[in-house]
Length: 297
Image (cartoon, rainbow, N blue to C red; front, top):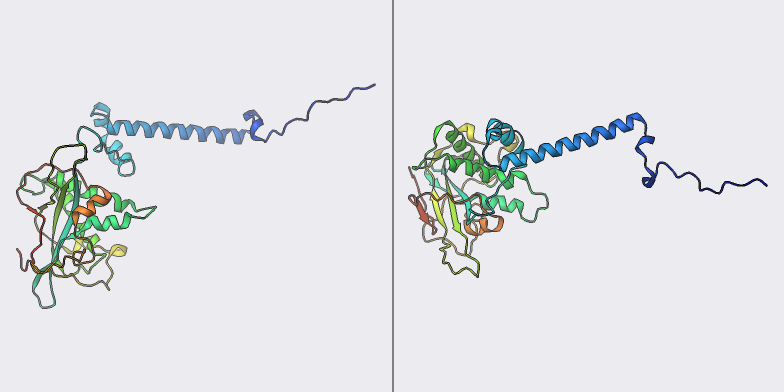
């Protein structure tokens, strides 16, 4: 009597458990091979660029510095090791600005100090997908600016002048979102540095009073104003003059233009703009009531 084939039927070659590369057609094989190869090459390239970015200066990193840093790593894959020893960040640094303008009577007035850092924090807090510009534009611009200043606070060379123009244009762009900047004639920036308090187990005493370091006034040129889609809303209010000394309302947490003026609390919520440079204290003023200045030159 004839026997029967009791073997199980052939498994489906398309199931995951029984996938065999050799059963695929040549177009599919080539596609998979190219995809795996491309992912491998890109992964190795990314690891190499990250290693050369953070490694000590060597012949290779010096030769291809423009490719490693500006061509690939910055700004999306920038590495910052200031969170670790031996020089971790020890201060919150906020960037503030004030503007000089002519009012309707032709008098020269000055606004209160406006925290640009607080404005960026407002765009980041409670936002699941915050803008990259809110994270890094002001911070990187301020770092580049302060790193190109000499001991007298003046920009050095063409790079210093470019950094100065850049950070002041960032400030004007931020201010254009809360007020009309067309009447603005001059702009002044300053840093608000607040040393971080020590943890409970550290017996060192740290003065956490905010220290301000003011930069020179800079004339606003027509080419510095935001244009096109970045231009401010024409319906925004004009700049508000600074409150007179002694008239500050302690219950008002804003700076007179709708942005928090407390650089300490602003920087403390989102981290610092950069590490304190340790420059001399000349030109710095401790925090306190900002006096109105009219016709300051």
